[in-house]
Image (cartoon, rainbow, N blue to C red; front, top):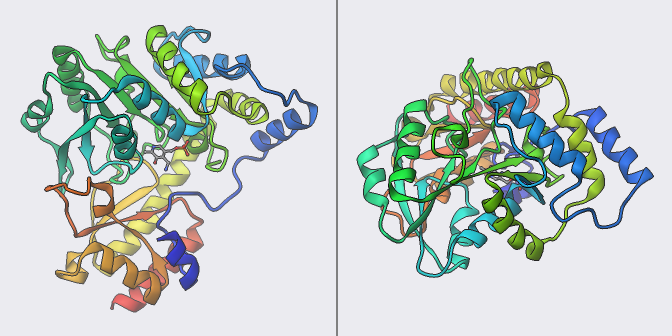
Amino acid sequence: MSGLAAEAGAINLGQGFPDDEGPDDIRAAAAQAIVNGPNQYPPMMGVPELRQAVATHADRFYGMGLDWQSQVLITSGATEALAASLGALLKPGDEAILIEPFFDTYLPVIEAAGATAQCVALHPPNWTLELDELEAAFSDKTKLILLNTPHNPLGRVFSHSDLVAIADACIRHDVVAVCDEVYEHMVFDGMQHTPLITLPGMSDRTVRIQSAGKIFSLTGWKVGFISGSADLVSLISKAHQNLVFTTPPGLQIGVAYGLGKDDAFFTEQSGDLASKRDILRAGLEAIGFDISPCQGTYFLTADIRPLAGDEQDIDFCKRITTEAKVAAVPISAFYAPNSNHKSHHFIRFCFCKQPAVLEEACNRLSHYLR
Ligand code: PMP
């Protein structure tokens, strides 16, 4: 969709990236570190300053008490953290549980490890998880469950009772939870993000994955973190060693500086994003889309049926990109290819853009669709 958007000269509300350069002081800290060095291979686990900063951040926000030397690993983005974790934990014949729709990198990495995915659907309009369906997905081959909260593409934050049920199932079936929490600081309306790893019985069976690119609106930086028990982190570090070995040291220093910013920085950032969500939601609702509840992330999910009837999400996205000059992403792309849960009536809009850009996108859609 980004390719089509560029070709059509459309406003790209498809791919999730902010349209500003990110915080000046964090970029300056990284620039200074690159100029002053060192620029040779940093330690394989990550520079000590950043591992310490990750542990301090986890303590500040969630009281996690991590040992920075054995329980934190720095990766080249959450993408590499996911590949390293799934690659290290899965072997041929294993099963991994995915919650559909899901971020597109999970399934290919699971399959590359020779494992298979068992998918559990979230049900519209509120994208609820049915616990009996979750329970039915476990088998004696299940090695892990992948949980993404706040959730891309849906913008949903899993409730405390969902988390308790997922933790209970992981413990009963003796499986690991791999938690993609890249949007942890993008939660709105007074909600709090709770890492699954902080629930009773989960500290030794959870891999928590974060992304500095998301936390600081610097998506091109590709600096991620993994935290968990010393045993899990040590196992995953072996995969990391053979995937990329290290992550650029100057960027790690910039991120270490950023994680030390005061609470107001994180609160203001999520407040700013919530107001952008509100601008886009109001504009899309005025046009006639049905918008799903959005409690976090960069994304709004819109039901296109009031405007598109039976037209499928992919065709609708192509049409609005080339004709209305606004790109969005079809939610059907976030399901397994052979999924029988796939819905074709929802599309994802990204709202981490300047208010004027969001308003112009709504004007274009309004003009075109009316
Ligand atoms: N997980 C989710 C849910 C994401 O949305 C993204 C980025 N779009 C990633 C992981 C990848 O993060 P990174 O850029 O740090 O590799």
